[in-house]
Image 1 (tube, rainbow, N blue to C red):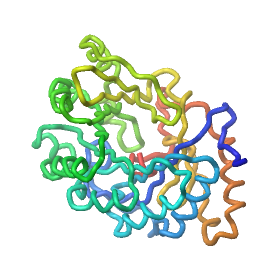
Image 2 (tube, one colour; image 1 turned 180 degrees about the vertical axis):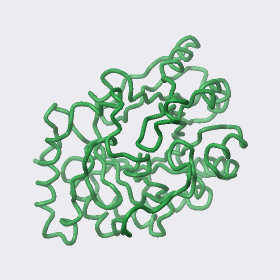
Image 3 (spheres, rainbow, N blue to C red; image 1 turned 45 degrees about the vertical axis):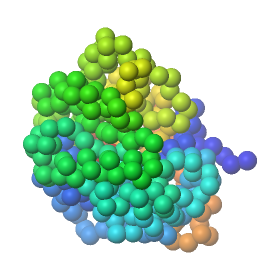
Image 4 (cartoon, helix red, strand yellow; image 1 turned 90 degrees about the horizontal axis):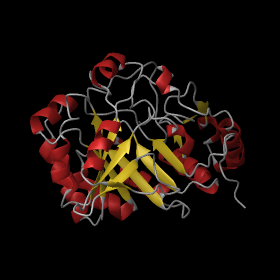
Length: 328
């Protein structure tokens, strides 16, 4: 019997967010407004073999879903090989990526062939000029073409992530709903979260997703039951719409009670929370297969230190300088 990853609060962890780089080519206002800047001494990201070992160990510990994150994960030249390496584990039923979408049109078919089962694309505005203002890149059409290419490659559904920002996109619900009416897209509004480098923007632009929820309910949208392996989104559907709306509201009461995810950073540290204080080093145990038992023990031991809440509502953003730091 494989020991399940369970913390001191009886939460079970089926889901790993695995960052493979913190480099990104976009300059989103809420994440890397000045663009990517290497920090500290030069660092190397997890190698293909290290990724293969860490995903294998998590699969043996009960992980059923892995999401590859960044930075922008498709900047890795070996990204397709990484997909294939993670998919070597039959216990991993879902292998997803969160991407800014700029390489989707070119590469999504090969990603699917390698074993990628799900795609999340970040799109914070449906207005090309506003999209460029938010991301620092004039790539709106390229990203939209990439979403179309994902459907053409055989994906039945695509998730789109939209960071909710006051007076930027929070009043654009009607446009977003029209976009997903005839498309099988789950559009997820994610509340802006405070990070070490983003406090001023947070004070200016944060708005609760409850405002969107109220508007949806007034228009006849119904909240769907949450599955065991689902992420944190509250999902709403409507009989007249092919798409869905998800709301991710980390400042809402009891948000952390259903936490089912752990994170490994691109340099091999286990993070128990996006806004935790420390990373637990794993990389010294990824050199060869002989250390995998020790690796499992370290993960199990570290998990017992996971806190009950992220404490974001108390203004505590931990050590997280920006959302590319450990994969958002």
